[in-house]
Length: 300
Image 1 (cartoon, rainbow, N blue to C red):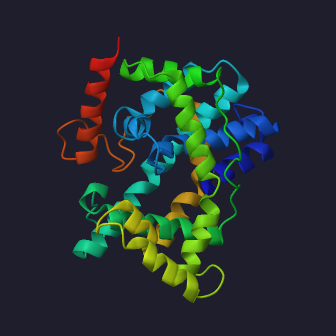
Image 2 (image 1 turned 180 degrees about the vertical axis):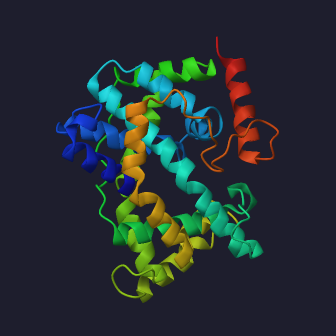
Image 3 (image 1 turned 45 degrees about the horizontal axis):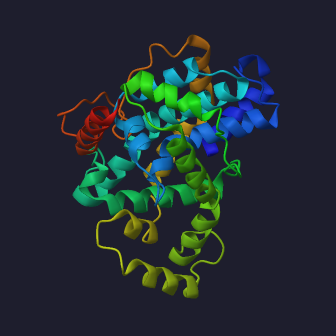
């Protein structure tokens, strides 16, 4: 949300740079929802289908399709928020993989896939989220859903155009509403984890919360995402330095993309930051392709 906030601030200060009128609350609301939406399937208890496709198979094409399918200014803002997410992940997510590579193999230049050790990936990513929330201004996640019975058609059409599959509007809308309700609590959850793990927000380490987190993680197996969330740790200094360097100029880089056109933006994997296809050695991409084939076989 920090980088989404930087983009919105830049657009409000320089309206000529903005493709939409961010002076309108509903437009800002739609942009922030778009910035969060690609990750909505990674929220516990939600369907991962759209998020896996959006991260691993033609991510930029899907974002371009959302822009093409926009029928209103809020639709367009949602699409630009989604494109913002794509660019952020391409720029910054490989940094987490390199941080995990250093922890597991002693080599920060060795990027490790999330599926190799999901718990460590999540623990580092949550720790980075905590530090960003602690040290940088950011808008709160939007309260209430954005998509409606009408606007969800933008997403349905974009998915059909990009992947050739029909996902029911009712299902897409229900998943969006479920994820939106949970994401609104994310800053508060980060504060709880930070206090329990001694990550610098509030008391140095809250003993009661520390015991609660320790008890909560017991049902989860080693290496799983919930375990990683409950065992979050602070990122090393070099990760924060590289994040600061990349985020400092992000609004300018994204603005240049908006102004120059998005047609040339490559379909880079949102975890690795590079162009990857099926069979390229990235397990999550292969799994997403299997999921897509299953959907294609079930579509009319």
